[in-house]
Structure formats: C-alpha cells, structure tokens
Length: 328
Ligand code: PBG
Image (cartoon, rainbow, N blue to C red; front, side, top):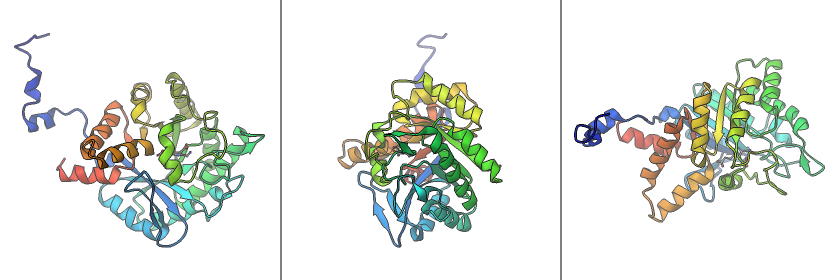
C-alpha cells in the first residue's frame, strides 16, 4: 500500500463535485416508503403528538396526501388504520369494509401506480392492544394465524399490492401465503417484518395508532434487542415460509442487524426508521440543538449504507423534497 505523501485521501474530498462522484451511497425518493394513518370520519387531519408533520387523516384527505407522495417520486405507502371500535378479536381488521380496506380502494382507484402496502397486525384493532388473540392472559400464536390470514385476504381483495405482517407470530408468513393463494391472490407479495425488536422506539407510534398494550408488553413475541443471530433465524424462516421481502425494525439502533442481513440474504431488504427515531430528530431540531435536515439525511444515508434497499420513513416526503432541491 502506498504511504503518505503518495497517498492522499483528501484528494477525493477537496471539491464538492469530486465528493459527489466518489460517493458510495446515494439516496433517492424511490428508496422510500411513506407510512400513513387512516381514520374514520370526514375532514380529519389530526397531528400526532410527538410526531410533527405526521397526521391521522380521514379518507377525504387521503387522495391529496397520496398525490403529493407520488409527485415526489415515492413509490409506496404503508397503511395503518384506526378502527371505529375495538374488541377482543380485532374484528375491523378483517372486515371487508374496515378502514384500511376502504383506504386501499380509494388509493388504487385514483392512483393505481402507487404501491399500497397493508400492515397486517391486530394491535390497532383489539381492545387489549396486543398483536393477537389473548387467551389466559397470553397471546395465543396459532389462533392468531387464522385472523392474520383473513386480514391479508381482505386487504388483497381491496387491491393491496403487498401485505406486511408485523405481529411477530411464528408461522405468520406461511399462514398468510396459504390464505392468499387459497383466495386466488397468488401475485400479492409479502413483506415480512421478520426481525422486529421489542423496542422503546415505538412509543410515539402507539399514540398515533392508538395501539399500546393495555397489560404487559410485547417481549413475549417481539425480539430481544440484545440478540442479532436470532434475527438471522427469523429472516431465514420468513424466507422459507414464502416472504418476498424482509425487514429489520427499528433501523437506527440496529444497523449491525441490517448489515448482517444484507450480507446473508439476497431478497429485497427493508428497514423501518420508526416513530421514536423520527421524534428524537424533530424534538432536537425544534430546540435548535441539531440541524434537523442534515441529521435526517445522515440517518437515512446510514440506513441505506448499512444495506437496506427500502426505507420506511416518516421523513419520506421532506427528504424527497430536499433531494430534489439539491438536484441529486
Ligand atoms: C404494529 C406495529 C408497530 C409499529 C409498526 N407496526 C408497533 C408495535 O409493534 O408496537 C411501529 C412503527 C413505529 O414506531 O413507527 N404491530
């Protein structure tokens, strides 16, 4: 290896154009997936506490939101729903007229090219706030599988391109694949939330989606933050069960897991830049403790550099605007 002074790394850094040419990671709006929270009612646009710029919206506001998203070059949206009422088994989740199913129809009718991804999990719909059926004080894995299958089918019936199971039930990808195929939805893709950790970073989302567990926590089904090899097993199993794409979630505190997954698996890999990660940046920027734009772009670049192909992020719209402004 050539030593100093023959080798000068700064040659690649001196000029902005040179830096741009030598850049290893480039963000683009087509990397992003934008999460949306849909709710019943008319003319609702309620800002989520702790998530400035993120709103719960009714269906009459949905089209404008989706049009703006499409115009920015963002290829997909991920839908979460707030039901009109919750019950023990999360009935609205698999009702064909449930809020997410209605939202999918509205989007697909007006913007057929927008990829619509439905989150498949019961926690927003159950009165106890857990991701599955509760029996004897615990979440019953196998009883939940049927309901997740039904939920995926009604979303596909409504026109969802992708279903994304996030309940962390064992066997959920296989059960959903079987249910979709049986219902004739052989081309509906599955994005598994394969390595989803039991994380404190979901706090603001649980307010946005009104989905906090009413007793206990999710550590019995979501992953332990201290383990990375288990994440590889989770991803492997989802692939065996038929996942078309896999995910690591959260993103920022789990860049090592993203990098490991990228090395090991060839499927498209998503990373979820979750609510708490967003809130921290917004709060610090609001206080002028950090430069919000700069830190946001640094974080998104890091997630992509670690190996994610798709970035699910609440920053999707602002980041796309910034990218466009830079002419990148
Ligand atoms: C539903 C679900 C959660 C998130 C996405 N899907 C919350 C949870 O598991 O408690 C979190 C997303 C975020 O924090 O932005 N199971």
